[in-house]
Length: 107
Image 1 (tube, rainbow, N blue to C red):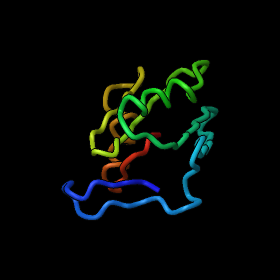
Image 2 (tube, rainbow, N blue to C red):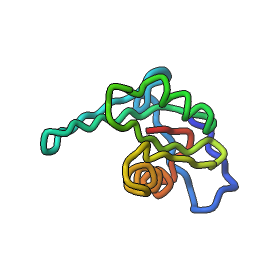
Image 3 (tube, one colour):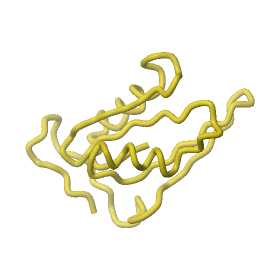
Image 4 (tube, rainbow, N blue to C red):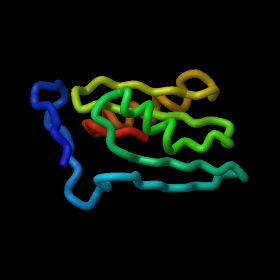
């Protein structure tokens, strides 16, 4: 489902198997901690522009923060803390994607 470049460092990239990531739309998970609600939405993105578009389309702008991280199919990565203290939200999410060798995804 996901064309992963073979010339990227870090070894073999993980690929999404059929049925694990929807062809359209996204997966969502919610968690409440100390009366704060955290919502994560995972979707596909071919490019970082696509990742930013995903955030604009599925972000809930009534929320205090809409942090995101994404890795394109070419391995370009981006993230945003969206007002959270610098380096505390987007970068850790990005590190999970990159550490898992995931390409073509945005959260």
